[in-house]
Length: 191
Image 1 (cartoon, rainbow, N blue to C red):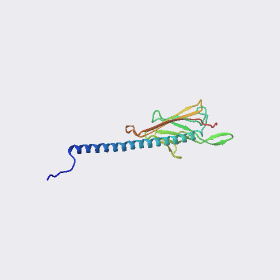
Image 2: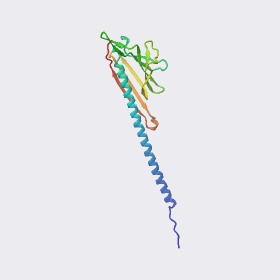
Image 3: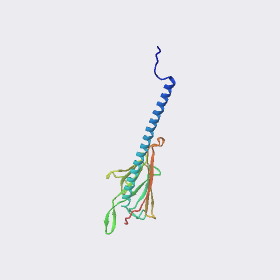
Image 4: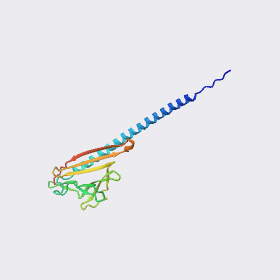
């Protein structure tokens, strides 16, 4: 009587293990690719939303200022360089608060936009007419993931051009998303 043992031979076991390893690698690779694509899509949605929100707020504020830009006007937008961060400027202007005798009247403070390049946050803050930073009203976060904020004032065309870049994610993981938009705003108030 001959007894037969059932089972895999060494070659069959190695082939089975190879197939199992390949299937596991395929499944894990698919999960990883799906995660990266989802993360990139989430990052793209976040930067798009943040940029649209920030540009909308800036536009609404700038429409409420004067078309008579400095130095010819007293209320229009101007740039003030940041002494602590070379190449960074704060956009300042006074917003309208009403009309008197057919002329616009303006707030007794500056509305300012400032980019915190360390944390990539765009702030709206307020200064008194001497330039001192105010705590009331408090500063507000206008945009997250902001890597560049470039305001350009064209006094001849009476426009303010804002270029904003928002970025989020890591390029080494192929999950980064970045968006840049430029808007041209023409304030419509005349002093």
